[in-house]
Amino acid sequence: MDATQLSGPTNEPRAPTPNDSSPGDPNESAGENTARHSPNLATERGFHWLMHRRFADAKRFAWLALVAMILSRGLLPALPGTAAGLGTWISGVEAGAALMSQWTAILGCALAMLVLFSLLTQPRMGYGYRLLCMVAAGFLLAFITLIIPRSNVGPAWGVGAGLCAAVLSFSGAWVSLLHSKTRALGLLLTLATSSSLVTTMARILALRAAATEDIASFESARLIATVAIATDVALLAWVVVWLTSGRLYRGLAWGGALIAGGVGASWLALTGTDASGSVLHLLLGRMFDAFRTTPEPYVNSLSQTVVEVCGLALVVAVLLSRRVPTTLAGAAALALIAGGDGDVPMSALLLGLAGLLAGLSSAVVRQPIAGDEHP
Image (cartoon, rainbow, N blue to C red; front, side, top):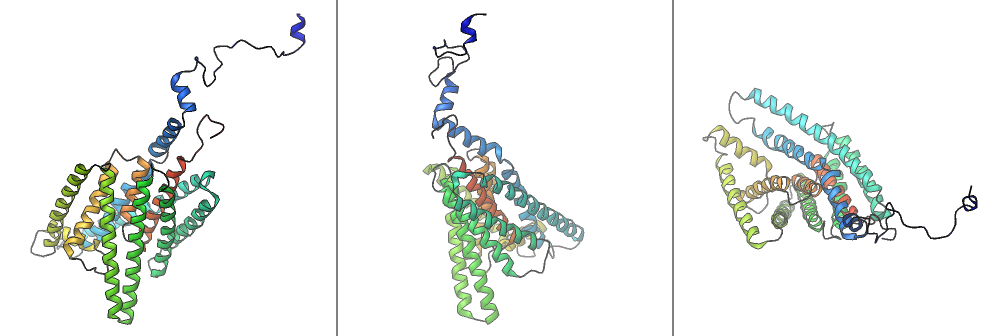
């Protein structure tokens, strides 16, 4: 045996082998070298993976929530009294709405816990933000699990759930506004949460005015409800800008088509409240009448119905859009479905889940760069 083999490793330079790679190694492919040492490309790949694959179930859940909302808040209140002989249909829709609502609550709580656990593992989001999300989400899920199985709970429980959802949504909007990739969703959540809080305030004031028979307080409630309608209009306008990527003429075309379709559908809905029309016409009118905001704002019924129709149309447009990443589309759709009903437990769950998804979406752009030891 040679003496050099018994002396152990030496410090002499070793000739490079084909398996060796370094940041500038010609044996490493250009794509791998760029992916490991280009911050932009590494972040883009991580963002694409999270937004399109990791939480793709958020978009599917938004479809389920949309169907459940239409059944429970629109079709179910509109069917009784529409026409004779609809007892079987009413029983079927009632059973379907109850089933869809329960599934939405169960899957929404499960998805919220999954997103929350994923968010808590993101150290770059800060200890304070993660602690706030954990506390608010815990209280929100506790409220939901206590309210959903019961039908005789007071309105204070719904208001509590709405406040927890507002905390989650505002916190998610704040961290989303700090990065360009999630800034549009952050502004959308800010407007949606503001509308929810203003509407809840108007309803609380209206209930108090009805109990004390105070006319001045009721007029103040109507004024606050009008502010909520104006916030909804600003929200819908921003969604159009987001979907059209800020292009002026495309945005004007989208907005014009949306307003024209909304006015046409609203006219059909308002004329369908007359019992002399067909059954489908009457059913459409009663459905949109159930969607209307209470208390009645200082806006005519046509304008309110146009806002509701355009809101539903934009939810479908966001879910079908390929320009918006899957997770962002799911969060935006959930915020739009929740609308101005923050004191309704199911809407509070959707709004809080949208805030958690927004926080997790902004977390990926704060992650350390793959392949770089010193980000």
